[in-house]
Picture 1 (cartoon, rainbow, N blue to C red):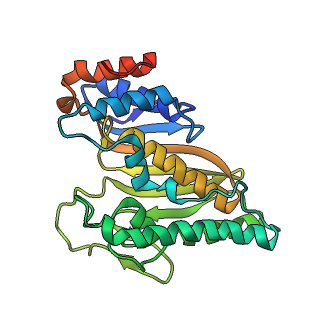
Picture 2 (cartoon, rainbow, N blue to C red):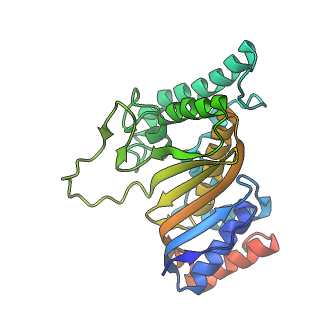
Length: 281
């Protein structure tokens, strides 16, 4: 049965509500929809609790910051402090464009090294966005294409549209490209990527995002995923001049990972510590 999580303002509260519902549901639920109304806002105490819990694993999981960076490497983006809009001065427009270009170029320079890391041979989430299909530099930059597309809408005064998306797994429906990672006849079972699709929607001048996951690991990945997706949405909103809307994540399978965290009691202890704003003992 599909599960609807009551929307929350912050990443922290949305994550907590999702984990609490999945724990009560037995540890795994299908088609779980989580919504954040103010993407990017969070409670630092909750992040600290998660990072400490992850650090305590026998095989240390990636930190929240590291997971977020697989979706949007925020440390590579130089925020100029203002959004794009029609009529920007040439110097302002150039600075905004240069910030995005520097992000894309820096990541492509790093990509050959990133691909040598364990689990990255098929590309990373961000590489699939900026150099599709993500396995080498020089591919199609889906983000740059979407920015140009949405800027065109902003210039023409279009405030409602749902025709922009970003492919992570499967096909990328990019005009005049016809790119595809796997043929329709390919019968291999694919575990990567867990994040398979991002949809962008305009309504009333607000840019919202829906991300679809095959398998959402709620303890080791979900919080970082929500931060990374929030950062990506903020980047796209700034680069296109639209207000930030909501972020929704649809997990076809949401997993509280109790087997890796001392069972249900272990997961509930992390939740309790996060609710109390205290680190896990």
